[in-house]
Amino acid sequence: MNTNNSNDLKNLVKDEYSKIALQSKEQNETSCCGSGSCGTYTIMSEDYSSLGGYLPDADLGLGCGLPTEFAKIRPGDTVVDLGSGAGNDCFVARAITGETGKVIGIDMTEAMIQRAKQNAEKLGYTNVEFRLGDIEDVPISSKRADVVVSNCVMNLVPDKTKAFAEVFRILKPQGHFSISDVVLKGALPEGLKQKAEMYAGCISGAIQKSEYLGILAEQGFVNITIQKEKPIVLPEEILKEYLSPEELALYASKGFGIFSITVYAERPEASCGCGPQATCC
Ligand SMILES: C[S@@+](CC[C@H](N)C(=O)[O-])C[C@H]1O[C@@H](n2cnc3c(N)ncnc32)[C@H](O)[C@@H]1O
Image 1 (tube, helix red, strand yellow):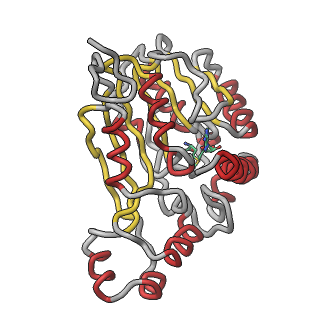
Image 2 (cartoon, protein in one colour; image 1 turned 90 degrees about the vertical axis):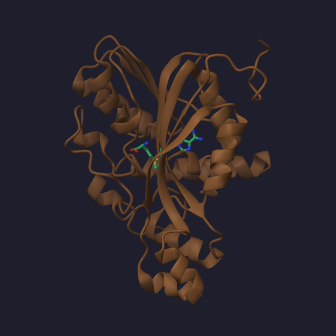
């Protein structure tokens, strides 16, 4: 993707999230996570309400998993949340890191950062920080994070290779991430992708699951594991319009379609020549 297209896409995403940042979760139910016209978005979001640290004002219903549940965060850890929105996962992470840890949320939408900062102030946290910045060029020094989390954001980032190279760079050796995201399995007809985007959001920038996992391996991550996988269920009438009976059967067998996944991986202790960021050892 050339730089102009990539910047145009990011500007569309920023415009959309600037509006969403001013709304409540209920209002966002008729919104979406990407650009364009949208339908019921919260089809993918999980129930956070029983989690420690949950702050209703930070929950805009924009996630597609519970990455903090799987992220093996420990007291005292430094956790970075990429695409932190109003801070939903940051406050849940803070409940685990405690006062001795540090949580840093990164988002490129100014209005989201403002809302997240207001939420942190309400909670009186001094070790939860929100920084304006792009996931393709994260404003955090190298080898800073014990854990990286992200919830339904990477699909919106035009250059996913760059984004995961940044995850690798900011993680400490032996640090790890749990990232929830939307991926595709099988070639979905373009018409179905567009309908799905209107229905569920977060589809248009999603890539094939195999490609996604390939990017992680190329960057040098190890112990890559799918911690959770959930099909995004679209109504039968939409599916029938675009899929042949054979494709419909594959879709029903869950071998094909749109999925929310939570992926875990580790930055190895030393990267010896197995990824772009490897050093000689
Ligand atoms: C679907 S929302 C998810 C927000 C949050 N993770 C949650 O679950 O509530 C996507 C967020 O990612 C941010 N975002 C999208 N692309 C980004 C990028 N390239 N760099 C930084 N933030 C980005 C948007 O501004 C938005 O706040």
